[in-house]
Image (cartoon, rainbow, N blue to C red; front, side, top):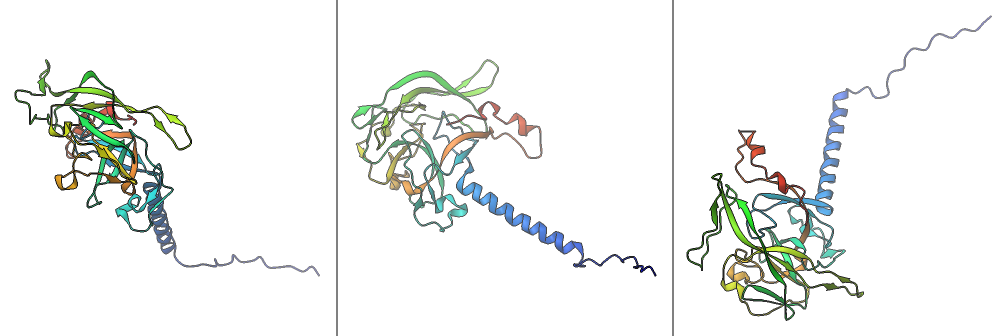
Length: 294
């Protein structure tokens, strides 16, 4: 007799629970992973910053949006979202170079992001004489170049001289548009010599010199260990290390306050866009500034 077996009936699934809870679990797991990835990226790699003032003209204009690299100077609690106090001190600390454009927490409250250029390192002597920057007893070369021009817009109003009468930097062009026309200069910082003897050529950048102001002549500043002397490129319109905290400046900035180094411009707007008029999102864009590196 031939033994026959009955066809096997389909087995019931081991997990007979509805699919919706599993989908919800997958969504929340994905969301948590996404938040962690974004937090790590912003804390350790890159983070966006916007420029709210004109203290870094001509290189940075009010309405610029840039990416800052978070790793070059090390990682600290200031690198984390909301400056969460989770990291003791600064890990992998590295000193900036003269000429770097840095984002930092501004003294004395250390809770607002500012951006300036590194001018003095620990041990440097910094002084301004008649609008010329001196480092360690030597003047920094300053050469007049073509004037800087930026369109007047909701984000940009022309500087009004406070110490020079009869000077107006707002110009009306033949097409009727209004622009700010500023005297621009090129500076080249002295070369850096690292601890191992490597010499790095000094960085060059452009500055504005708009009038003779009290901050054009300063006493010599000796930069203490562990701090930096920072200045804005718009020399007559920048509250920086030339001013004490009591005067509204930042004095010497602790290197522990560093957040990142400016790297690339990702967007720029003149402030004329309206959210309910989508075409203005494009007419307000300063497309020529996108992609600029530091």
